[in-house]
Length: 341
Image (cartoon, rainbow, N blue to C red; front, side, top):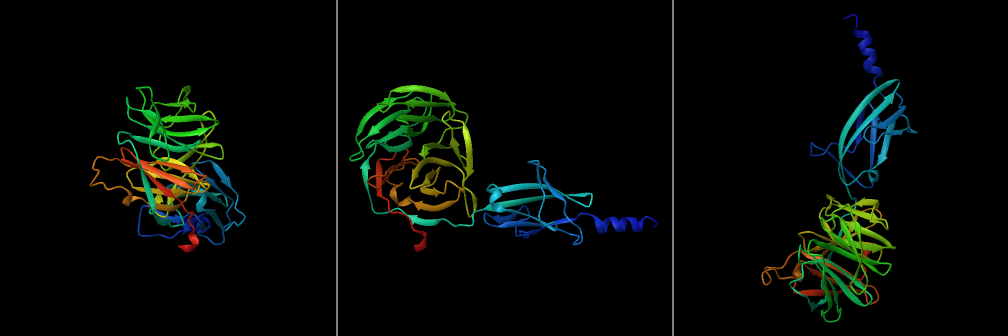
């Protein structure tokens, strides 16, 4: 019993810490936090003062202005589960906190139904991987090992103007143009192919990601890899930066073909007949376009997933298709207005 006073003093001065916000929810594995929320850690002993906080994983040190609590914005987290291990130091003592925070968007995507469109014929043998509009023509890449092709298509009637077969060893994926060159990703081959406007091969470069979708924004290449990430690439196809794509439920995975339209990134989601519209700065999904009524899967049981988005900026036309689809959808896109939601 003679040690009791010492133990009692230690308990009073110990740097106890608890997460005040976000509160405990109905999931014992994590606490939900929105993109615009602020997480708040507080000291259990109200008389204690916080000296510093160390993010154990990232080796970052913080010196809070308010020494009675520690806060940070949800926007500093990546979408989905974040395991936070923080060391709190006060009065010469250390307290470790470990929390799982599940970060989601504060915005529920506006739902848009794709209607008022017409169709053009499309080669149903085309396993479409990429589609874009360039120099008054549609350019399409198709995949599968031994069957990958590049095509130039007449956007007025769907006729194939030119078609070339690619290296039979590769699986071609997303396609885009910059500096008068076509850039074609490959799925798992670790290569990017360059072609000129006549579909003549120019160069081959190494590529470390899985190739899925590719588009251009402000003369910068943006690529998807089937995850919930968009990668901003350098001229040498290395990742300069990336964003995580997420909505009010969490990360959106299986992002596939991409297109830049009016400063936003449109993307197919593998396995779904919908298009998501992504803010390229925050990664938030702002709109979801329902295209499920555009293909009758009972009438065409052999068609694959929706994959292919192209935009004719001058005429404000969006071209959409999918793997082995019998037609191209042509939609006169009207700018979305959230104020009318």
